[in-house]
Image (cartoon, rainbow, N blue to C red):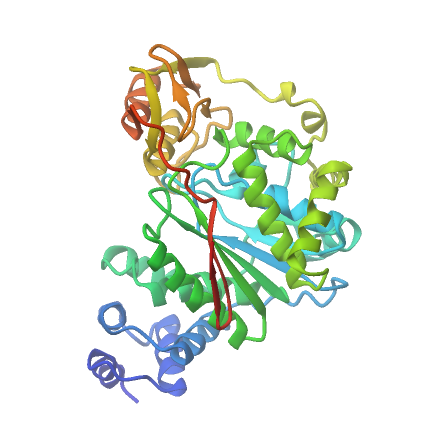
Length: 440
């Protein structure tokens, strides 16, 4: 078997055999297949695509290239959730405690942010003392006792994906739906949960800019999950507008606390209830309507918030800042962003809002950048809301005074004010199960 022949086959749009895919991935991980040859294969896949069977074999081979985590030591059905990333997306830290409060088990490994998208682990580390690197047995013990633990990705998960992504990044093949699907799902399969909920973002602040592309990606990922005998569902949710009011790590943790206590922004609360209901549905807690009621009850009776506090305490975090969020460190510099005319906010570019928060220090410009946990943006006026000239529409927070002016400029450029109130945008556009797509 030669990689040259496999590249030629895919270049002509032919389906690869299981053996050819396994040879290609395993050979690349071992260093037996050169970067330039794999780059040619990635470009061939970009142009010619892969069928569902090829994609499932590719993903499982990538997953098996490193550690496969065995969660059998955790009692009950384990459900995982993955978001394709966005601005102000702190849903994991809300829905995981909700699901645990309703009897589910969430043993979740999350990532850090890069660029305009925030990372769950960075947000968690804004809580003083909280540990996101745990030994496996401690991780399992916390999930068995509390029902939920969220940690950073550990061990050698899907090294094939890491090597392939590094090539995709420099060969203009990042935006291939089959390659995005295999990248995400290889890590999900390696992480070991029984069921997977996918939150596929669509819009200006997401990697998938159009609804059609988002549905196509969701279909591919659901097919991969089901092929691996993992019950899998995807929701297509909006990321044209930042989610909630807070962008930035400490600010988002405060918003998590408020939402778990029933005081969260309407958009964030609604998306979290739908995500949590689907996670509970996946583990057999009832139909979607019943599961949504369970999720709402967990917020109303305080049990979801207490699960979050228990998880933070078990991982060494200072729970007092959750019970009194005024204890979070405050940014030394603040600037109000004012509306420049009367009207309605008719557009919010989520990606540009996220980039403004990075300038303030809330995100990373490179993988080695330090994060200012107190930095970020509080959005006071969102899409569809009326504003008056001179009215405060956002607050900027930072430890770098010189970043305020460029961040304000970027934020203002992300906002468009018009004379007419715009049409409402759905928070959830579609739901994808195997062989079933519901558009809302």
